[in-house]
Structure formats: structure tokens, C-alpha cells
Image (cartoon, rainbow over all chains, first blue to last red; front, side):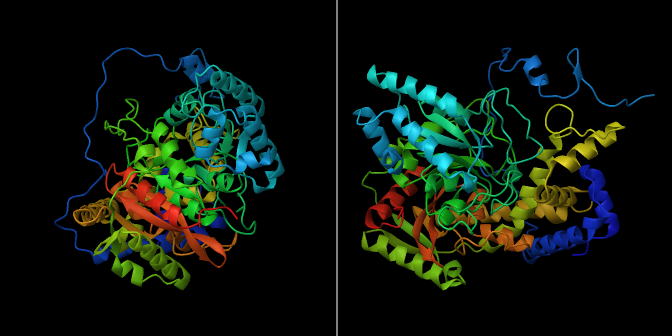
Length: 95
Length: 479
């Protein structure tokens, strides 16, 4: 399977990871070889098979709707480099 | 005191209980061995002072007859399990400064059982790798031959057990990350049924495949450790609300076994030593009374391609959370929000993690979703059905853990060749079944493993069979 320059641009845009020119050739080679291996799936006719997203049939368990304070907000926000008054800070998004 | 670290978990519990030695002695013996073998690079962090203090508390509990089941036993956790107020890096630069505000359920359960945490073990970045070479903290060396890989992603845990640096270690397995390193290091590794052990506080890679388990010296030890780690957890929506059987009793129980052999798969093993060792293992078990049945797993050869769509797809979704804002690496070179996302992620993730995010992103993108992701999920269903059919007539299924023994560090650069390491381990993850790897011989003078796959929630049976094998052989003894 061929990966085009446009494919690389799309993947980079969607995943929010830069692909620099130096590595794009080796990345293309890696991705093509992985997708060629993956293409073996085409040997099977799966038109009548249902997809299985999860190995175990398990219904979601619910708990009582009681407020819990397992982790304090301040403690969580200590993990961020940029915060102020309980808010996370990012570069400006509106002029 | 160096002989204390050679003891099995079973003997350590006995010795601590009858006060032949203390937790302080055993903990200090491990700490000194860890220092001596620092060059193996098994640990990312070590909690020296804290575990010495905890050992004293454990000794007091023992004296006061208040000992908990694993009181005073020094263990190691894979650095994928969050521990409150401790760094949890997941082998990545992205989390190099992440100090967890809460503890994983795996840590809490073992801590509540009295175990002492020596430190956190090295691993492939975000558990993506089969050689330990993708760790941001440098690869672990195989203690048996330091030029070779310990396997991955739980290479630190497997090498630490093999090098006598802890009594047992926790680990995780998404496509073979417990069993392959266990096989490469000549130790015992079990991945339980999906949902058996809580994933709360275990950093996510591919959520429908990830499962925590144990690497230990033998099946008996693994049974004890697993018993105290398993159980329903309301905080994990995929946790199974099922009774946890007493694996410690089951491992020694008198059980009959019917072992299924996927004949075609075995005939196609390319490595003669791996095939001969497998056949030898099966004849040992057969002589001991196990019944052997040929089985058919017609779709198993499609496991690898299906897995390398599903796992990267889930990985690309899970790792989208690393945006540089709330936690994890945040780039300093930022002039817009887009820059913040892109630069933080580009700087924070290593090559293999990026590759998997790219593959997952590609397979989930418009126009490719059906051809790749949906197709892989359908194949996953076929593979699960193959196992369901097989388990109608057998109680466990045997195959090798890997197609080879350990390889030289740096010798595999082709990603597909590396992915093929997981060819025999992936099917159990796709189906969510429990599976164990036990040492079963050597190839090129390095250990290889026998893999036993059990039916859902039937960890006790494969532990029992593994224990039988270990009573009949000495492949698991460290020589």
C-alpha cells in the first residue's frame, strides 16, 4: 500500500504531531510496510460478520450518584505548568 | 543475606511468618542487589528510604501477629501504574515530570496486602515495544546475556525478577508484554482474563486489550500474587464483577487437563529448537496424565494484522489526551494553541509511539475506517469464535510464547519484524483470555517459553497446569 505526501500531511494534521522532512522517507517506508502486513486481512470475506469492539460482554455497572472527592482540584492542577485561579492557561485563542 | 533474594515468594512468606528472617533483612538485601546490578537499568525509580521504613512497620506487624498476606514482601511495579505522590513516567519523556495525584488499584491492593514497593520498573514507552528499546530511559539489559534484549514492554519487570531484584513484579500485557519478556528472561508471566484486574490508574495504551498481570519466579508465586491483585473495582467500567477464586489453592489442586494443540500452527514453527521444545513439553504433560487434543484455530494467522489496526487505533485515541495543557510535557516554544498541542506532542513522544499514533490515525480517518478498523473488529470476532469453539472440547490451549529466544539489542529495525515477536501472544489479547508463559527449554542457549491459554476466568487451571509442569521440570530454576 502506497502512502502519499498528502496522506502524511493529513495524518500529521489529525494527530497534531509534526513530521519533519528528514524523517518522512523512513516514516513512509515504515507505514507502508505495516499497512502491507495489515492488508492480509483482505483475504477474508467478513461481509456477514459483526464487528467485536470488546472481548467481554459486560454491562456497564453503575454506582450511587454520590459526590466523591477522590482527588482535589488543586492537587490535579499542580500537574500543569500554566494555571491561574483554578483555570488552565493556554496561548490566546481569540483576538 | 544474599540467599534471601534467591528464595521464592512462597518461601519468603514462610520465612517471614516463622521469623527465620525479617522484612528489614530481605528489603535491604534487595536494595543492595539493585545497586549492584544498576547497569541492567531495570528500575526508573527506587524508593530506598520509604521501603526501609515500611519494612520496619511490616516487622512490627509480624511480631504483633497482625501480618497481612504479603506482609513485608518487597516487590516492584511497572512504571505504568500510578502511585500517589510518586513519579509515573510510563517510559516516556511526555510523563517525565508526572507525579501522580492518586494510586492505581493494582498498587493499592498489593499495598493493602502488605507488600513493600522497592521501586518502579523500566518499560517500553507507553508499553509500545517488544525489546525495551523504545524506553526514554534507555533499554534494560537481559540479565542472562547483557547483549540481548529482555523483551518488552515489561522488560524491566521480567529482568528484575530474573536478576533477583524483587520477589515478584507487576506488569501489563496488551499484545504479549508480560509473556514475551517472561519467555526471554526465563521467568513465569501471567496475563489474566480481561477485566480480572482493575485498569484504574494504569496508564492506557489500547483499552480493550490492556490487562495487568504478574511476573514471578514460578507459577505458585504468580498464583499468590495474582490472588491479591484481582477483583472487581467500581472505578474501572470494564472490571468484571466475578468471584476471584483462590488461585493459591487452585495451583496445587488435583485437576484433570485436556490440552488443545493447534496442529497447523505448530507444524509451521520455523525455529526447530522452539518446535522441538514445544513437542517435548507437551509429551512431558501427556506422560503426566494430561489428555492432548488437536484443535483448529482457522483465523489465528489474521491476529497480527487485526491487532496492528485495533491497538494503534485505540492508542491514537487514548494518547490524544496529551495536549500539553493539563499534565505531561508542555513545549516552551509556543505562540499559538495549535503550537502548544503540536510542539508538546512532537517533543514528548518517541518514534515508536508516534508511528503507532500515525497508523491508528490513518486507519480511523474518513475513507479508511471500514477497510481497516471495522474489518479488524470483524476478524477479532472470528478469532474469539475460534477460541470459543476450541474450549468446548479442551480445558487449555498450548503454543509457544514466541517464535524465537531473545535477540541482540539493536538488531531489529524493521517494525513488522519487531511486531512479529507477538505473533503467538496477540490472539489471547484479542479474545480477552488468560494466558501464562513458563520457561520450557532453550534456543541458542537462551530461554524460551511455553504458553498456556485458558478459558475465561479460568486462570486457576492454567496456573495449575503450569505448576504441574514446573514440578516435573527445572527450566524455571535460575542456574
